[in-house]
Image: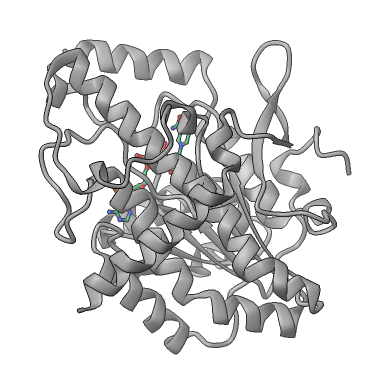
Length: 340
Ligand SMILES: NC(=O)c1ccc[n+]([C@@H]2O[C@H](COP(=O)([O-])OP(=O)(O)OC[C@H]3O[C@@H](n4cnc5c(N)ncnc54)[C@H](OP(=O)(O)O)[C@@H]3O)[C@@H](O)[C@H]2O)c1
């Protein structure tokens, strides 16, 4: 099937397959879970709150095409990406408790526009910690299980949610700045928060690239079909991503207006979920010779989602192998410090 025409119904049957979706309790993550369970996948929603998970289950149950059996295949895995040690232990424990298989790991959870006035308990900028370091810690513990699944069941895929906001990281990654607070108010503060978000999304992109290079490609060379790629979901204004705006002094009427506009004319969360699920499930992705790549939505003339395609990153940093290797080393050192 041509990659430029994809819709949720095209997802192949996923019976017996197991997926983890981080941040699967709402917005793009929840719609990804929806698309996966509609094709009989067992899905673990990895998230911070059990009540958020229960709400997600209620939302899924209320949909006319979702059966009780499908909902019974949705499970909760408590995961807070803002703590390295916890994220790593959660991954290890999952692999221990559920050693049978893990076919799809969708690293979707994310935050943006953090104020920059505090660091995580591990000592890192909060956006970078949540979006990249937490996923690095969690996903790397699951690689042996993904490999085993590929050996026994034919394949396994890791999909990391990046963003076209990786282009906000205009100077690549300043590793020193990742361990410093930078509290600024007003427009300057928002500009800096966008740039920190950009760094975290560039890190997602470079992690997928380096993960494929270090882990997946050598296994593929031995006939074990594992892949790592990353995606931009599209711009969806109605999700929780931008926060309430009040922390920046933006009147709630303005943020509500933007959300409303986004819901009316923008991309829906379901459209936003399509590219990640496409890369996580479709046979033409498996057939690609190269991975560690970046996929984005393809739009029709009036801005609706019609499919997904591979694209080069928007900046040179997204293909910078030296930077990707430095990020990997920096992330490994962060994990070692957190374990100490
Ligand atoms: N929306 C867009 O336009 C857009 C564009 C490009 C890329 N993206 C990316 O798409 C992904 C999903 O974004 P979204 O728009 O759906 O955002 P969202 O509505 O804010 O959802 C974010 C999800 O991440 C989870 N999360 C946040 N911090 C976490 C933590 N410390 N540990 C575990 N889970 C955590 C949230 O869980 P809680 O419910 O517990 O908060 C929620 O499930 C993100 O990676 C984002 O960067 C979004």
